[in-house]
Length: 449
Image 1 (cartoon, rainbow, N blue to C red):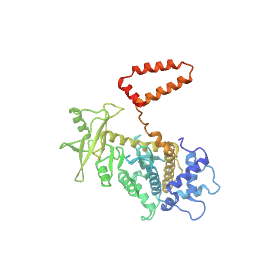
Image 2 (cartoon, rainbow, N blue to C red):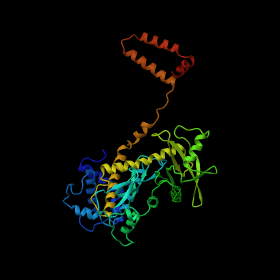
Image 3 (cartoon, one colour):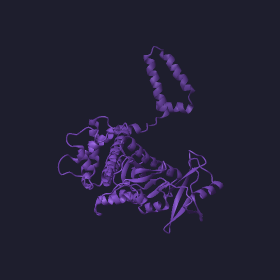
Image 4 (cartoon, rainbow, N blue to C red):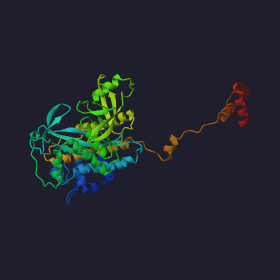
């Protein structure tokens, strides 16, 4: 967290720089964030983000003389604000800025994952539910934060999100406000009760329509399924994820129906050689809705347990196994985002009970991370010094050997004239040195003279 400015002046300049790059005023208007009078919304956002960086609640933060915390809460709780679109447009503007300094050959990728949003001590939070945590294998009160991010292998930017509740009525705990079904607030609440895999595909589709040039979508085993691969292919992108070692998912390999486990046993008993970076890399065929879809699998040994293995799959069958493993390694960047968000950016630390306010809080957290990512990218990237940048990288010209020796002997003669040593002694040394050289090189020296 050394990239967080340590003074109010530095943070103010970082916020102004960020606002200009992403055209914040235009983005706010397009997301229904506006005020007809009073303090500007950008000033409210700057105060909120500064409070997040200071890791204070609204009540403990420094009071601004221009507005109260009630004004801030009213801004976050506004049901008309499209918080998801706000995060999306900010991310797209930053991507367009970063791409100007990135090699065009570098592949871009979208990353899907979800994380627990705890609300353990809350009882009246809107749409609160009992959600299952796959890491601890137990239920918690709260939400699942479905997040879509963008990565070029260096910088990660959150691009969209959906705060998911539970679709099962027995797990729904908090009350829900009633809105007209045509409004944004009603659609946002309906999305919270839908199947997460369907919402994930919608987030990818929205990112592509907004202008993302990513060609891959990375996800873990929870999202990986033949249907997910097929739906992403229909959007024009290739999926890349880790497959479950399940006995319920079948595919065909050389005309035979198999599972991941049975295929690994067959490859292990065959004469196929294992590679250094991976074990095996066959191409199998999945059938989805009557259509055949080829998928390239890569079996990788598990570092934690040598007797176990991991399986990566992608519909981009032309990729090499090493490229597949390297590309999937980017998925860990979204885990780093969740860690930074929860430890430093108040990810799930808020007293807001409105569902709109929770979405607004998440948007502020992701906006804060955008500022950190921008500061990190600008501080790490190499700077050019005009023509000196190219001169330093230019190779030195090759010198002819005969001319080089001629220059050295001339230099020795000049030193001998200025030194107290007898010039005859120096000339004798040079003559003896010439006699030790090959005859062809002596001829080149005579020509150079």
